[in-house]
Amino acid sequence: MRIDRIDIIRVKTPFVHPFETSFTRFVERDALIVKVYSEGLVGYGECKAFYAPLYNPEDNGTCLHIIKNMIAPAILHQDIVGPAEFMAKVAFIVGNRLAKASIENALWELQAQREGKSLKTLLGGTQDEVKVGVSLGIEPTIPALLEKIEKYLAEGYHRTKIKIKPGKDIEVLREVRRHYPDIVLTVDANSDYTLADIELFKAMDDLNLQYIEQPLAEDDIVDHAVLQKAIKTPICLDESIVSVDTARKAIELGSCKIINIKSSRCGGLYESKKIHDLCQKNNIPVWVGGMTELGIGRVQNISFASLPNFASLAHDIAASKRYFAEDITLPVVDITPRCTLIVPDETNGVRYEVDTKAIDRMMVSCDV
Ligand code: OSB
Ligand code: MG
Image 1: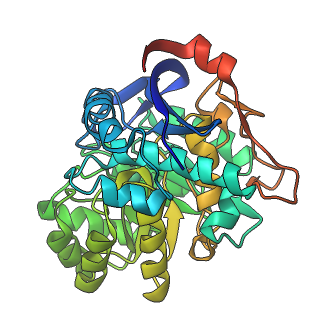
Image 2: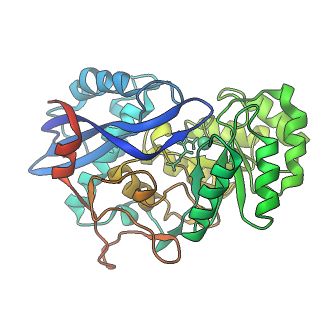
Image 3: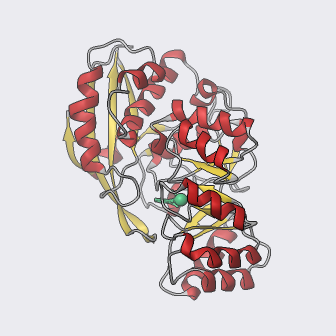
C-alpha cells in the first residue's frame, strides 16, 4: 500500500473521575490520533503516550516529533506491504515504540479494509468475546476506594486491580480483602518499590492476590527474579516488557509468571503478537493492559485480546464510560451483561466506526 499522507491530531477530553497512580494524577486524556491515507482509504491509529514521560519514556511531545520528523519521511510516498515491512523501515529509530505503534496500528486498519477482513482474522484471533477487569486508581480514603470497588463489582467486572504506592499499600489491601474475601484481586505498584521492600511483598502472600503487577523498576528484571523466588504470589510484568527479547529474558530469568502486554509499549501489534506466541510456548498467561485509551485504541485492544493465550485472565479494557463521558467511536465501547466485550469479526455484525465529529470536538491542534 502506498502511503499518501499522514495527519496527526491532538485531542483532549476530561476523565469522568481523576485517575491516580503512584506516578501522577490524571484528570484528562491528552492524546494524539494519527490518520494514514493510502490509495483512497484512511486508517486511524491512536498514540497511547501521555502528557508527560511519567510511565513510558515517551510523551505526546516526543511522539509528535518522531512521527512527523522521523517516521513520516521514512514512509511517505512509498509502497509498504504491511506492518512487518513498516517495522523494518523504522528499525533505524531506536526505541520510541509508542510513536511507531500509532502508525503501525493504522497500517493494520488499512490492511483490514483492503482485504475486507477483521483485525481479529488478520491477527489469528480465536475468541468471540473477552473478559473485562477494572483498574482502580488510588483514592484519598479507604471508604472512597471501597465505594468504587462496589460500583464496578455491581457492573460485573471479573477482576479488581488496585493501584498502590508506598504508604498506601498493605493496610489498604487488608481492608479490601476483609470486605471482599472472595473477589479476584490484583495490585499494580507501577515500579514504585525496590528489593528493600521484600517483607512487604512477602506479607502480600497472605492476601490471595491473583498477581502483583510491576513491583520494581522497569529495568529491574534481575531484581524481579529475586523477588519472584521469595514470594508465592505471581509477579506480572508490565513496564519491563517492551519487546519479544525483553519477554524472553524475563521468562528465562524467572522474573514473572504472567505478562501484561500493551501492544503500544512494544512498538505495535506485530511485535506484541510475537510476545503472545512466546508466552504461550512457555506457559506464561498474558492479558491485555490498558493506557486509558480512547475508542480507537480500545477497539484494537479488544481484537488483540482474542488471541488464544489471552483466554484465562481479565483485561484492562473497560467500558469507555468507565473513563469518558464522550468517545471517538460509533458505537462507544460497552460491556455485555456478562461483563465481556464482543470481538468484532466479519460475521457477527459488530463494527466500530471512527466518530470524526467527536474527534473534531476534542481537537486542540492538527499537524498535516
Ligand atoms: O500500569 O497498567 C498500568 C493506566 C495508565 C498507565 C499505566 C497503567 C494504567 C492502568 C489503567 O492501570 C488501565 C486502563 O484501564 O486503561
Ligand atoms: Mg500496570
